[in-house]
Image 1: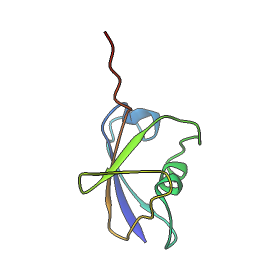
Image 2: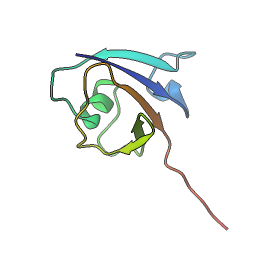
Image 3: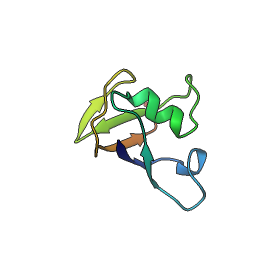
Length: 78
């Protein structure tokens, strides 16, 4: 199955310079963690992801044709 990934923050860490989107092929039943691994992210890399505006987690199963938005964890401070 194919999914599209858009990376908002520092896409150059996972994609070629100048690219913000990638379409990747994964087996049926793949999870968000599988998507991140396919992009070259390590299992301990911090990230957040959403599908259709819903926050998803590493073990969330991805459907064919999904558009996944990946972004850095939100940090606050005083």
